[in-house]
Length: 302
Length: 228
Image: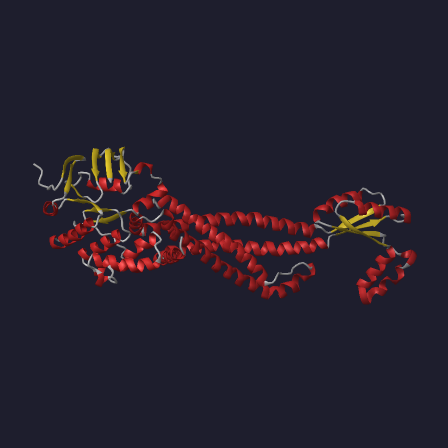
């Protein structure tokens, strides 16, 4: 197809949209709704993914040792734990170090612990074990509990597990929702294109008699669907960006209230929105083109 | 050359529109297809355009069996035909010039060729001065001239006209016939379906007359008279 043909197809595509303003608006709205949901899901998932990564790097298990474990046994134990799957660092924290740390954390009131130094130290020796990924935590904990010298195991994987579960749930529920909404949008777009085909049937007939190829007749309608999808993706990304900006502007307040969790940190607007726009554009354009192809197959007998 | 060999067309509703039709039209001939409404004229033209398929028999155009044409080849086949209809079928949102140019754009003609050829063809049908008028600004006769120009712009070897004067007054109809005759004299085969007796009887060309789908008369320099 020559460049001039493409100019004709594109001009025709836009004409089709202007001719059916009401249905075109309905189509853009439908695809926009689907893409807004997609956008929101992407924003959540992207942010949660980053939070999870942050959590994973902090994944730690503390194993408290019974009193009186000999240095040799302790050394063997450290080597053994180090060899477990998912463990990437083991650090021995003596009861003395633990007390010092506690004192440091108490700051001004550190003197309260003065009486517990030396023989009176009630704290146990411990291993601080760093884990690569949350899925290894349970296995490591089980193994640690089986060791006689270990008194107690302390770990805080619950938050990480929850975030991971949440991200997975959002992905699953969200993507099903997007699929449903995208199908609805596809039906509306294909109906719009069908109406355009109908309103242009005379011209289509003339083009056929003159000897226009099937694709020459089809392209304007495919472009119509494409434009509808792209318009929907632009509008939806704009709206999601507005919403995200609103959230970002308030995130300092949220951080103030929830900051102690140390995980709530939103990604910058441009980075997230570029990502959202790419996916919206892709889905919007695909749904638009597929919907018009469907309509053409059914209603454009060339 | 156009050949109909034992062509029968039965529509799905059981109507037999053409029944065992045989004829040959040589290159450069001018042939009238005549008959009352329902005689099968329109069916014959639709078969020639490969808009519909014959139930049996074969149609051969320029040594090519139409039934062997693949779907993708149909547009290219149609480009070898020029077609005009009773209702003109112009694109209403395009000027006369653009309507004619469109036929060339569709076949992918270069712009320089379009700029040269379209005014020449419009001049030939006597519309040079109204090239930039829209169809609704033109009379019926003028619209049919635009349609003729569009049919001719790609230099088809065959011109098919389905009741081209049906919507025109007698004087305008004769003017259109003068142009069609001119086209024929330049070597284009013309097949024209009509029931305008005065035109057929004035022009004295070959006449194929149909009645209820049957070819009842094939006559050189023939006429078309009331059937008894």
